[in-house]
Image (cartoon, rainbow, N blue to C red; front, side):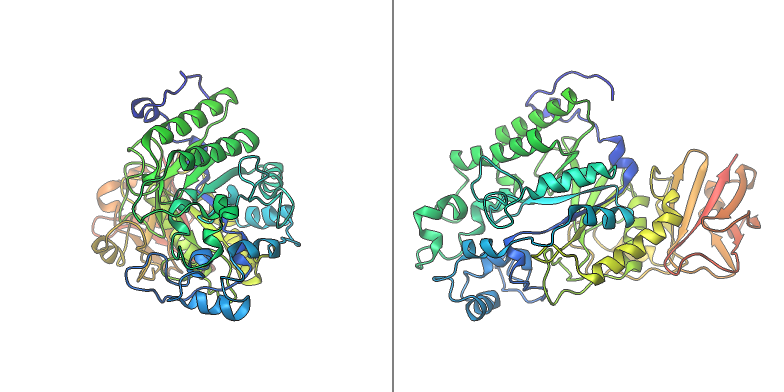
Length: 486
């Protein structure tokens, strides 16, 4: 890492911070939504109340929805634990014991899936810290698991040679529990104000004390765990600019002292372009993007994402997740995949099977993913027209088309071009983009990852590059042609 001047808490200075090369190289990360909200194991439906944010059965929003008498979560909580006036969100914390949490097992699974950066949800909107905090008494070392989850996770990740990411969602903590004030719930008890925060009118900007607490918790994680990537959820736009600038400058300067390359992600317009890495939630760019970006999505198949474990969880197929990864990488993007463990720390077997399938595919085709950069175009194929008609952005996985082997995505590395067919190709594959982009004289050899020996190919002025497919292809999900250039 090259020596550079310290960063000042100004946007002009912070926007000079580069995207880490390791982030562009390593492409794929896994993180976990895990906390007291996983104890009920309830969520996963697609119902929502009109005009009520988060009112679908997103299990990670259990702590908010349990206080809303209009919501099914409220009725479930009353049946299962008792009325929220008698059993509040704070009372779920002792039940979050993490008795079977094995960070080495998690890291082994995630690394085996092909992830190169991993980590926990540091703090969701509920205010419960998943690290040994001196700033926030509501933390996993003081109660619940009674251990330093983040510290154990970080040690296991770095012991396995992986980068460490921490995700912060606590910018929305200010509004999260403001759902039913003045109704006799523990939300209004002064003893728990540091968990639920004081009551305030909707739309009121966070006060000074809240901003200081927001900042101090991030500083604490930076100082104690040195994350390689700080990821911020929505809500960051409600944080004052002077606090955001100070936190970013602190993080970037601490990384300089430790000779580390680090990154910060943001959503929407919560930071100026260049101050961090743009992130799309459950979304994608609709074409090749001129700057590196990230998408966070969940292994759960609920359209807008069910982020924490629920007993009714449904899972995306390995094919869909592999195609998501390939498509995003071809467009200059990276993938951060959420996996939801149970409250006891075990990861559901369906999720394990899917992650193993992803790992099997990446062990053969990872050469076309890791360390690559985008080509002139992201790809070609019949599904592309449908993609171009869709709007790139957040939550656009809904109605996502299923790709076929005629859909091809491109990546490059050194003197090699990779063309990944999103399916099982026929006897021949036509790569039409080569009609205009590549002359036959430039091609030295064509092969397929996972298959020994070169393949026969020809170049046609009307059809582009035509490659003979080997009799047995390695994958039922996607197969990569390696095109070595002169």
